[in-house]
Image 1 (cartoon, rainbow, N blue to C red):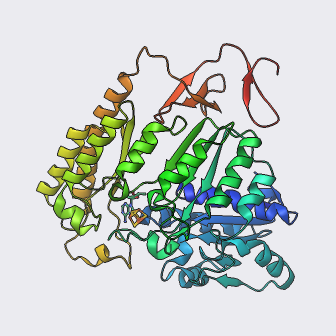
Image 2: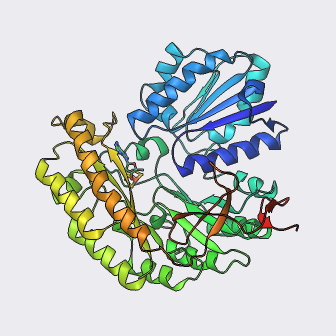
Image 3: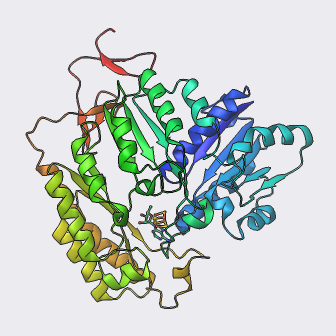
Length: 431
Ligand code: 5AD
Ligand code: SF4
């Protein structure tokens, strides 16, 4: 069969999509980039905010035009209360529904559906053989020879934090660290295949290892990855400010391949809201952490996530967030309007901020942050920086796009025409 996969959501989902593709290829299916020619359409979903769910429901509605294809839907949204019922009632064109603990069973279910034409639903909430955290598909992906300069490697699945606004712990389950020897085996093989950068992924990478028999934490894992020959850069996503130990900061400062980019979701600047969010740190502790990072890693960039309009957020609470942004001067921030997620504690709080107020706060925050993002970029004017080239820029194939160690995108004109080699590298000249 020819399969076509669409991915919504975060890097974990992108990484899972690569694994899904590997599993399908392993049993003889081939990828098509043209949905019109697909015999199997897979949609990997997200439910972090209502806007993601709305987009996905619109997308699924449009799939009714592809009557020739088997339609399979998987990922976080399938695990959310009420969604399966909704899909069964209003999206009858969907043939296979898989939850996040059943993802690895997709090839088996495709075969079963092709033979029986009976709808398949598996949203079991248990860690079984369908859980990507336990499967050997990570190795499979690598054996198939991943192309490009960079590869994502999931190191921990799930989240134990239960931030009061967040649906992730409910749809992705509790933390499961992958075995360090399997992660290292994968990364060594990736480096042998020519991959120059790995991104270690998890909902909360710095709680890596707490559930392993062996005494091992994220700093120890980074130290091991740093030794892998051939690798040039190591990135990781996402870290929780509460779990960012001194040991981890010092380790990152001392390892030459680990990028000096810290993504530390602040979420809110008021202690009252941080406590309601169940974030486990105060604004003072967060500020101390940033200062420590800037002392040990003076050339680092610091980026963040911020939510505006959390229930009970007053104008004074929002002013605290603005003050933190003003004080810290992040290099970049992802900013979000709070979106109530049913089943989470925050959705039960009655004093929700109006949508008009949320949007006004978002705009003020973005205007303030934009001025600091510009300041951060302006600092690099006239400087020579090392970039990892990612390929031609989306808008102009004569211009190339790369990233600095601090994760800033740099567009540049190569001195001579670059070529794409068999492994997907872009090299100038004829080699
Ligand atoms: N509403 C708005 N933003 C959210 N995030 C997580 N849950 C919600 C929600 N219910 C944001 C957080 C997180 C990022 C990935 O998404 O800022 O860090
Ligand atoms: Fe959600 Fe908090 Fe876990 Fe991040 S740390 S995935 S925001 S519960």
